[in-house]
Structures are given as structure tokens and as C-alpha cells.
Length: 402
Length: 233
Image (cartoon, rainbow over the protein chains, first blue to last red):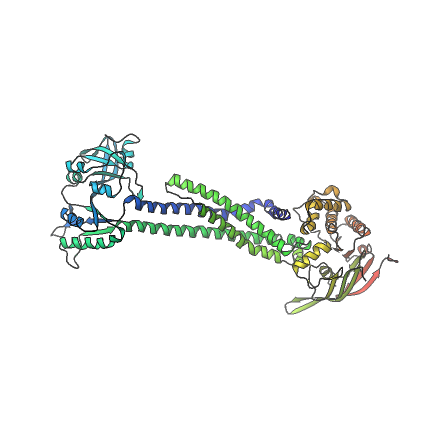
């Protein structure tokens, strides 16, 4: 009972000076709010990376040919160095489970007067399966489309929306260069991989792509699926030497193709995310510390301003511990209030970021508790020194203070 | 000597000021008995304020013995000294020293609050103390809504509310005009008449004559002790 009264009495000073209290707590509010919002954003990004890995299909090596260099030193515009024979040879490797061809070019796709620029991707059925494409509307491409050379197209959600608005796309016709393609489906959204929007694609059968869009039979690239993750590195080496052999590239000769581990791309993105997370945590922590210093500063000013009051209280029998706890309660109240407000603002900010910027955010109770607890710790730590200073004032000296 | 409320023996106080040190008290033997009203007089720098400060346990003497109601308190640390002030001493200061944001009643109940006394008893004793200085109607006024004399009467109520062994008053009328001075001296006289022991520092002979005994301090020593009541009871 008396303890409660003691706390209430300590809070009287805050009530008498509430504007200053609010301004002082602002540092804590901003610190906690940014901690909450930023951890939610970076947790969302991290979750995004691991779901990328699941969604894109595991254990994939990207194999790309370069443009053929003519004897006069010039490069051709269309002919690539990879051949069907190369791919067949790769498929024979024991650790390789599938090889999917792809042919990628950015093109303008139109429907009536609407048009949009999209990544036109010629693929075979294997590629589609490897990358876990799923039909959102209609159907995906089939091996039969490929064999028969049907001029059909499966759109990503972005070009579908651009070209047809909300209306069903299946059965409509789109125009690429001078050819018309029938839309047979829209694939389910795949989200982003790093900076790339995987939903801004249009899929056509690889044979059709080669015949009508790119010209020639050469292969731009292929995705190679490997049996298991530990085999990826060694398989990549095997592919390198296999194709180098087939292309008769000696030691030290310039390679005319490249291999890349898709997992590496994603883990690089993950590393960037965790750097981002560390940075945001550091920023939030700095904001909190600055807020804490602000509180210490104001509490010191308050102790000086109230030196006479402290002297009076001591003369009337307040023990040093009472004075210390009075000032500590004030600092803690500022931090608790600031911490609660900060958590609330941080939650709202995370929501807004999700809504407006479209970034995924992930809120977790532990991160809220940690953010709030750090504001408490800041209060205890930075409130301690001013409170101790108040407690140590000599009553006779304090009362002479004006 | 059993009824001695205050008893100092060879009390000494030395202030260090860099290389120099100043001896403000040079061996004061001073006794106050229960029910006395003692005025301490002396020119400025004589050590009378230092003496009152030590009597109030606001400062610790550098030598000698100081007993309050038989208890030796000269060596007490700040926490113990705070408890002595809370339980045994009431203060009235020259500058009133009321908390400006608190009402008269809140100011008066502060010593009881620090003594851990429950709310109901605090209310009751606060009301009685304010009535005894004639301010029962002003309990909810802030200090700035009161005259100087009224503020000092609130301070007197605060000094007596915990029923201390002794009330120490430091120039209680120093900041007041003559009407307010009479008002405060009348209240102090009243408090004394009801049995309180009072030690008051003043430089004014006129004020000192309200006491029953005057002690003169000069150069850190007591150099005269005159009784104003022919026949002490």
C-alpha cells in the first residue's frame, strides 16, 4: 500500500511536467518502434529467402552457353555454343536427374491496344516440372505442345493483369512480334527471387520459341537438376570438364559457357538479408541508446532543478534509498511508457510497410518482448546514475541551493 | 540530567577548504532539557548555524559526542541520520522550504509518509497539526496561495506532526514582515506551551526573548547562557 503510494508520488513530478516527459520518452519510442518494425521486416525477408528455396526447386545448376565467336573475332547475335549433344551428354552424368532447356528474352506482348514488356521464356516440360510451376488458371505447357509446335502461351500473373485486367485470360490471344499465341493458362504466383519478379514471365514451348521467335536451333541455356545438395559442387565440376572436352577447350583456353549454382544465388541473397538484419538491429540499438542518454540527460537536469526539493525531503526523513527509488521510478516510467508506445507504433509501421511496399513482414512475440525489455534495461541503466546522484546529495548543502 | 533531550560534549566541526581548514565549532558543551524553548544567538560566522545543522543531523560533526534522548548519533551515516530526523526532529527553516507543487496538507504529511504511517492516521494527524497552527481551512491550498506567515505556520505544522523530541527552527522569522513575525512567534509559543521542546537560531534579541533561555555563541564556543524564566518549573 505504502509502496504504491510511493510510486504514485514519484509519478507526480512527471504529471506536473508531462510535455517534457513525452519529449524525453520520444527517443525510447523511436528506438523501440524501429526495433519492432525492422525486425518484423527482416524476419519477413528471411522467411522469404527460405521459401524461395522451396519454391524454386532444389539442387539446380544453371548452364549457359555464350554467343559463338566467328573466326574473324566477331560474335554472332543468335548462335550459341551449346548443342543438343552437349545436353544429352550432361543428362548421362550419374548424379544428374533432369535437364530442362530454356530460352529467355525480354519482349513486348500485346493484346488489342494493351501491351506490356515481359520476360518471354521458351521452356520444355522438364524445366517446368523442375521449377515447381503450378497452374493458377487453365493449364501449364505439355510435352505435346512442344512436339506439335503449338503456338500457345502460359502467362505470369503480372502480364496477365496488365493485358486483361481482372478478366479471364484463358482462351484469349496475345501477339508477340507478328505471331499470335493462344493463352492456355496463367501460372500460380511465384513471388520474387532477389531483384527479379518471377511473375513477370510468359512461357512458350521451347520448339516454338526457337522456330518463330529466336531463329536457329542453338541452345541458350539449360537448368540441370542434381540428385542431392552434396552432389552439386562435384557435378558442376564434371559438367565443366565434360563440356570443355566436347568443345575442345584445352587448359588455359577461354571457356565458351558458364555454370552457376542456383542455391548459391539464393544463399547470397540470404547473406544479404542477414547483413540487413544485423544493420537494422544495430540501428535500433543505437536509437535506444541515444534515447537512454536523452533520459539520463533530462533526469540529471531534473535532479539539479529539484536539488532543493531533494534536500527538503531528506531533512524530513527520506532515506537515500527512498530518494534513489523516487528518481528511478521516474526514469522507469518514462521508459515503460515509451516502450509500450514504441511497440504499438512499431506494429502499425510493420503493417503499413507490408501494405504499402508489399514487403513481407513477420511479427514474433519474442521480438516484441526483447524490444520492450531493452527499453526497461535502458531505463534502469540510464536512470541509475541520476538517481544515485540525487540520493547522495548532502541535505544541508541541497537546501541552500536555489 | 535524565530529562536531557539534547546533550553535546566537546562538539567540534572543522570544514576543509583546500589547504586551509576552518574550525566552526571548537568544543561545544550544550544541553537542552525536555520542555525548554532555547534561543541561540550570535553574529554571523559565530557557528550558530553549524551548531543547528549538527543538532538536526543534517551534518556530521568532526569530533565530540552528540546524544538525542540518550542515543549517541554523532557517527551516524546518512541513512541512520535520516531516520533520526524522521523520528526525533522537526524542522522550521528561514526560507519555509515547502514543496511548491504540493498542497499544505501534502507538505505537512510528508514526515509521516516517510515514517511509513498509514493513510488514515496520516490524514487525521495532518488535519490536527494544521488546526493547531490555525490553518485547518487552508489544507488544500498550494504554498503560493498562502502569505509568508501562513507558509511558515504550515512549516511549523509539518515540524510538529510527527511529535518529535525537539523542534529546530533556523531564523524562522528572518524572511517575514513584523505582522507575520508575530504570527509565527505566537504559534511557536503555543506549541511550546503544549509541551514541545524548541531550539531556535536567531540574530534578533527581540525574537530571542520569546524563548525561556538564550545561549550566546561566539567563535565556535558558547560564551553565555542566560535564563529568561526566573523560576524554571
